[in-house]
Image (tube, rainbow, N blue to C red; front, top):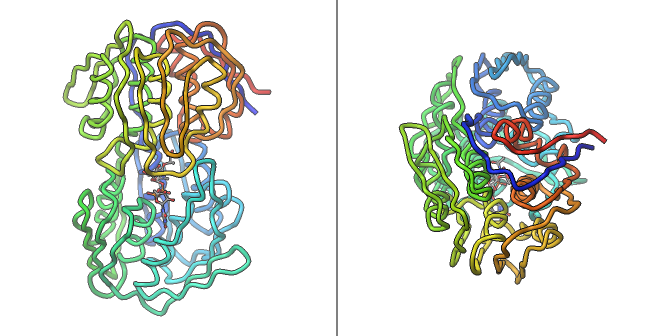
Length: 419
Ligand code: EPZ
């Protein structure tokens, strides 16, 4: 187990470069098994989840070479369509292999992915969409077995713009007969990146980024080379780190449009933000202002994956802020940890009421989920005294490459110890 030790109160100053997006690279790695060919993927972030998924690809028969930030996957030949159970339990997003396997082999056996710290994480919308495409699905003993002779393009309406369901249906539909239309599709930038990659392999997909995605099934796929988009959630986390410490950082290699919802709230909280071609300069104020209300929404609304980090910021803002988490059922685990630092937070169902205090004090904390863990780091950076955060290897390192190293480069007094 790893622990972060933070001596708070230092302003962050300097420049930082964004990494490739975790939530883009994972579906694209899964999708690389569809073309039965070579895929060269650049700007791969150095993350535990990436290693977990690339190990699964090797385990089922793909050849995977990984040097620096480039991965070469060759999915030629017969692959094992029984996905090993352990990685699916460890990492929910392995469920994206279901659609990819169906798109390539029209069959797959995969274990039911566990829920995780932020909610039950059902997959009913995934299964509804695949059934519409003609897949026979049986669920027993915790396993899902999918099989069909052929996939038939259909019109599929999602009750909720689920990111994972949109991705799984897209990947199964690329080799269906005829046209598939996904209505009320997720609009996240990572869906656009998946469309771009799949079209480079020979697929015919249009509309990603809008609520209606059309996929014309095809039989022929080819090699592809692709560069993953920057991680908007990691980028947003660093912007909030500058805001909460009253520092000034230049964040390079970002796509400004992906950060609009956060930037408007950071401006409201008193930060000054300068935008360049693909960089943002942020300066935190001496004292942050509270935000009347932040409501998490599917993209292009305020991202649920930045809710915890933003809550840390509001704990020391002047006034009372309200946060409503509309996407996940149980995504306030970080609040009980922030209370140990002197934060004043009341949780009522999906709503959090945060009365800002002048200063947090360091405490012994435990990361309970990925983004909640990052939120505790941000609070520790701003707090007076020493904060320790346990369980960072199980959570924070899954989604943040060298988080401690990057923060130290910006002037934070942070050390990682392995216990
Ligand atoms: C993706 O998860 C991201 N993960 C999550 O990021 C992100 O929070 C989420 O999208 C929302 O933006 C990856 O891309 C790997 P959803 P996903 O399906 O696909 C309900 C992070 O921190 N739902 O859009 O699982 C579900 O319960 C992670 O990087 C159903 O009811 O999210 C949730 O309440 C956390 N039935 C809501 O929809 C379904 O079949 C949004 O889930 C599917 C989802």
